[in-house]
Image 1 (cartoon, helix red, strand yellow):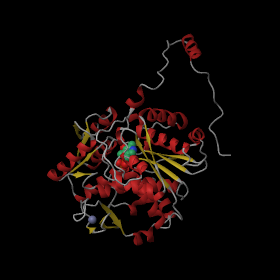
Image 2 (image 1 turned 135 degrees about the horizontal axis):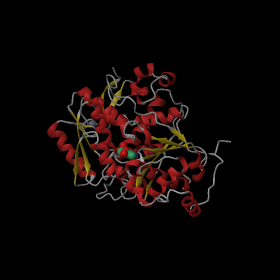
Image 3 (image 1 turned 180 degrees about the horizontal axis):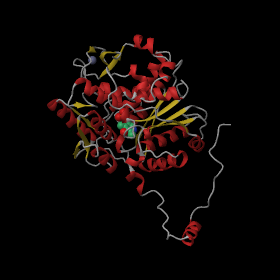
Image 4 (image 1 turned 30 degrees about the vertical axis):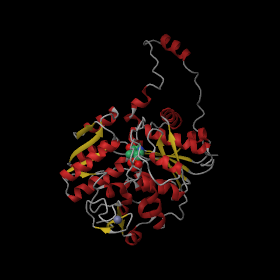
Length: 423
Ligand SMILES: *Cc1c(COP(=O)(O)O)cnc(C)c1O
Ligand SMILES: [Zn+2]
């Protein structure tokens, strides 16, 4: 059993039953899951959470499922990496990377939302799960559908990275490549959802799906020793993750798990598709859609973000800001994260690091502030982005003389002093 009271309209607060609904019939506002926080408060405390499993289900009372976690049992509780090398490079003494490049099973934060959504689809009795995806969602829906014995239909823009396409097809999913932008894919999917009655995780069961993202924020706070950081930088596509990380911190505060939350939430997007950052910079709550996204950060290329307005509000309410990243900066920062911390992030990680670097340069993030960079996906899925920008392997004959000659051409060997430590 769960602690869900039902759904509630974010705009007019009208209540709805726990059904596959997503928009308010009266004001067209988005619906959100509503919990019985009093009952949750009676069973949830730090010790109870710490005694839970090392995955998102340690926060089970705060997630909208009724029965067992029948799929996605190993998702979450990814490392919060103390990033000393990267901190040194940026001039920060308290830097962390929340590393969802190693989230189970499909190596992005999307497993958090899909684990919840697919369980919910099973609870509602849907035979088919589906999604409109910029890539990572496709991988995750296909994998969880396979695990749950459901048929999956995955709709993607036709120009996605090879790794994202292959990493979906492997699960025997029905992959539909649509010649169009993500927004066109999404519009089509709304019609397919209506006509065929399938569970589109990010459309008709979106209120449940989105709750999974809260765990990204819960984990950051718990892994920092039950403390909210000063800054979290979050990449945004539809704007759901940043909204839900904030909601998660607020819930922890409400439940007495965090004494204070004064975290400033910063949004990161690509320069070629940054409608939320554009709004933040303009100081206007009107999100102007980007018609033709142009960026190598395809996972973030949503021109008309469903939760853009709420993401904007979170940034404003928390005292945060936003920054863009150009394609060159994305590649440079993917390499920088790998070279400093040994973390190979996808393009979205490059976006987030590039934005963070700008916020440090602008003085928004102070030297000793506790700062968390959200790294949400794995670089092996977006190899095209960096393929032409890396040193090629040194080719030699299988002989020591050939190696000696090659070595003379390489940069001198240095290092050996080990990683920096806190003094
Ligand atoms: C989907 C995605 C995001 C953004 O998520 P939203 O909730 O749509 O804002 C960030 N990073 C990666 C790698 C993603 O796949
Ligand atoms: Zn309403």
